Length: 590
Image 1: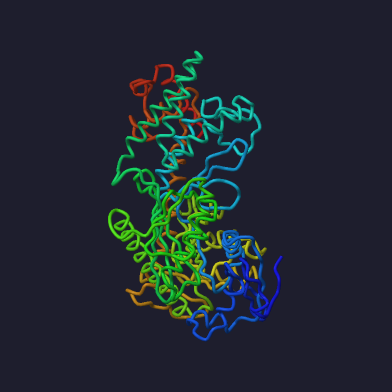
Image 2: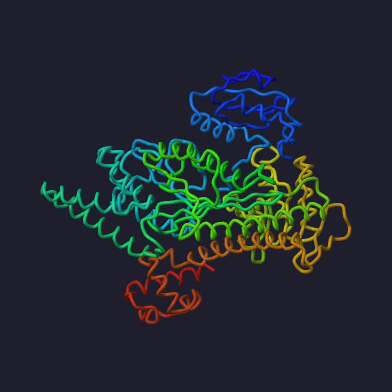
């Protein structure tokens, strides 16, 4: 329970957490202290730094919570910052762009790929830079160790029938045996390859001694498969490393922290984070705030954490993380050698990302100014149509947040409107998207971009008007001259050709176009695969392909004789007669 106080002299000389509030009772800063009284009194000195002076200008009163130890205060501080996100704290903003492995907190755990790290009792490994390679690896490991993939355990499914799951849902494997399989996967993502090999060898030997030869053979195959995978991952620069390397870059506006994950001497992942409330803050304070928030969450803690500068609470953090890891954890600042070179490399990455973020932010600020819209367009939704003469029309919506594509929010639409009528097609797609917005469902964009000129823009404004949506700016971007069309403005806006704002709009428009074209190609290929041959008994997919390759198209098959058709490899005389008769019947119907 928090205790209110307006006088720092009233505070006790014990560890705890303090919550500083403004006159509206909003939390503006959260801190922890070894001695609450001494720490809070330091805010009332005359020699405060500029950032703390601004904080104290908004300070009205505080609340505090007493803890038994400073370590407990550190954990509580981290949890409260994550919960309340106070304005003047340095806050970790996890943009979740890189995938993680999630081992679920269930009796029979699943192994999933996710971009969201939640405090849900599950265990997370990562981040991993290559999603495609990670999916292949997870598929391999799940097939190798046969862990379940289903959400509901409601009886043996197809995966059990094709030997991809041990069917814990049907008690075909005990909880203890299943845990061994999941442990092997966890060892893999922790870089504990020797542990996997030792565990599999021991279990294989035990199975052989008990004359369980079938089980021993399965374990032998698993052992060989793991060895093959490890051989492909031998890109080492040093050995026996289990560490995270962390560095930051910051200026008066932004701060960025980058983490390189090194396991068994291999860089297995890289992640970057923006930190809020870190403007004009020293690197030591940024890294300290990051460590507390990053590792107190559900993440793997390595044996060693390498940072560029000594931080406060270093010893306390080591104790806390050692407890979490259940093994010693050291926080080190190298001055030479491999660790020093790694820190320099990570620092360079942080600087590059920071500069990119500044460029993107500059483009968004310029866009707000050029378009005269009320807020910086952090979320932009863009739409495009793809069809051939009105046939097989599809639409796409792509989403960019803070200048970067958010592919999880992309949407594709099969257009029902008869064509060719691009305006009506655009209307249908926008109505399907923004009818949800009028019902307060889904996020509201800061800007909507439609591919096209005045006509498409008029359609969009009509749709918004029909749904009584008046606070979402909408623009059109015409391809030919890259003119920007704005509602109720007769002449188009012509942005400088080399402006970052125009380049961003072009990138978003082109991404919407690419996404629509790809979807259209997929539907076209499916349509191509469907033909009159599918209606003939005895003509399966392989024979259809052979016929099309031999005759080039359906028309030539229609005009072919029985002898011509029978010349195709795999087509018997009887089947050739059926094919010929099928097309003859269809021709007579016409």
